[in-house]
Length: 452
Image 1: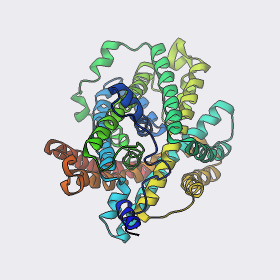
Image 2 (image 1 turned 120 degrees about the vertical axis):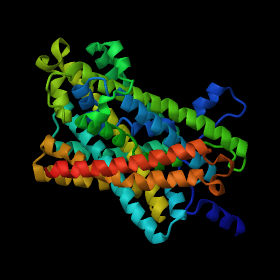
Image 3 (image 1 turned 45 degrees about the vertical axis):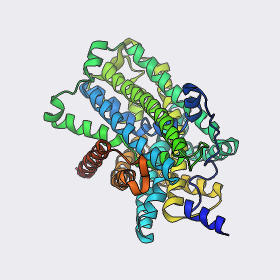
Image 4 (image 1 turned 60 degrees about the vertical axis):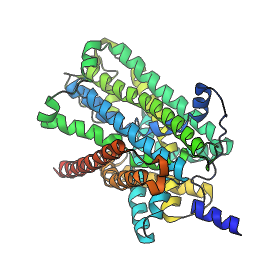
C-alpha cells in the first residue's frame, strides 16, 4: 500500500506518456557516439515544430522581400530555441514530470483547467496549420478536393497508434526520415537556384536596417515569434523521459541531460539549416520579382513558372515542394497529437483509452478546418487564411509555457544541483519577457491587419 502511495506521489497522475516512458534502452560505459545514438530521437520530434508548414511562408516571403538580410534573425531564433528546449528536457529528466504536470502541481485545480484550455487551443492552432499543409499538399499532388485531404489526415491517428505499439524508436525513425526528405528537397532546389555564397554569408551579420525599416522589423519579429512553439516545450519535457536510466542517481541524470541536449541541439541545427534554405530559396528565386507568395499554392505555381524563376522552372520543382509540404504536415501531426495527450493528462488529470485520446486530440484540429472548407467552398486561399488566426492562440499560450519553465528550472528546491546557473536564469528571463512582449505586439498586428 505504501509503495503504491509513493508511486502516486512521485508521478501525480502516472508517468508522462506512460506508454513510452522509460522504455528505450541506453548502453552503459559505451563510447560517446554510441551513447549519443541511443539518446538521439526526441530532438527530431522537437525540431519538427521549428520547420512546420506554418513557418514556410514567413521564411520564403522574408527572402523574396529582403533577400538574405533576415538570415541573422533565423540564427538568433534558433539559439533561443536551443536554450529553451534544453531547459524543457532538463525539467523532465530531473523531476520526472513534464511541463504540464509541473505547472498543474504548482497551481490550483481551477487555474490548471484554464491553462489547459489555453494550451489546448494553442496545440489545436498548431495542428490546424499541419492539417492545412497536408491537405493542400494532397490537392497539389493528386488533385484531391481539400475536404477529402483533410479527412485523409485523420488516418494519421491510426498510423500513430500502430507506431506506438511497435515502439517509440519507430516513431523517432519515421520522423527522422521525413525530416531528411524535407532537407533534401530544399537543398536540391537551393542548389539549382545557385545563390551567391558571399551574399548568403553576409546575411548572418545583423543588418542595422532591420531596426529602422518598419516592415522589415515586422517580418523579423514574425520569424522570431513564430519560431518557439508552446507545444514543443511540453513535448520535450515528456519525451526526454523515454530513455531508461536510474532516476535516483544524479550522475545518471547528468549523463541523460548531457546527451539529450546534444541530440536536441543537433536536430535544431538541422531545423535551422532548413529554415535558412527556405529563406535563401525565397531570396534566390523571388527577390525582385514582385511575386505574390502568401500561400502554398502561390509558391507551388511560382516554381514552375519561367517568368518568375527563370530557366530552372519545372513541374518537378513544384512537385518536390508539395512532397516536402506533405512530409512536414505528416511529421507535425505526429508531434501535435502527442503534445495534445501530454497537456490533457498533465493539466486536468484526464485519463481515457489511448485510441480515444488520439482521436479526440485529432478531431479538435480537424473540425475547424472542415467547417472553414464547407463555409468557403474549399478555396485554398480561404483555408490558408485560417493560419493567420491560429497564430493568435500560439501567441497567447507562449507566456504560460515559457514563464513557468523558467521559474521551475531556476528553482533549486525543484531542480537541486541541476537548477539553471545565474547566467542562464538571466538570459531565460530576458527571452521570456521579450518573447511575451513580442507576441502581444504580433497579436495586435494580426488583429488590426485582419480587420484592416
